[in-house]
Length: 146
Image 1 (cartoon, rainbow, N blue to C red):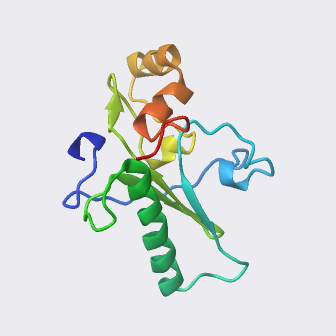
Image 2: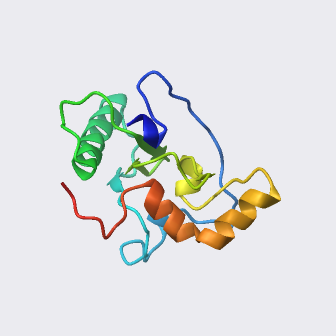
């Protein structure tokens, strides 16, 4: 699992806002038909602010689905994944690897907001194709589940 860039020892939290003109794919009216290149697991909340217990229960349920997608035992403590949380929903993205030929993405990148550090990385993303890179970082939609 370390190859996916995740371990129980190393965790970090990134808080960010997305540009006003950028709609996260779960918020799109056609989200169910969108061609997201990787598997993800989504839990929508009602209009009320979810309680801490509801958030924990949702996370544990989504994490179990991510483990299944990765072929990891539900009892396993480690499962490489990203979590994206907004007021209306929580999303868990199982991760296969931390980078593809040096191209990497954090949770924001998996949502379509890829950050690159230099022109070389930008050209790499263009050459390999964002959809292909993201499918390789996560569990590709066409990949058979274990």
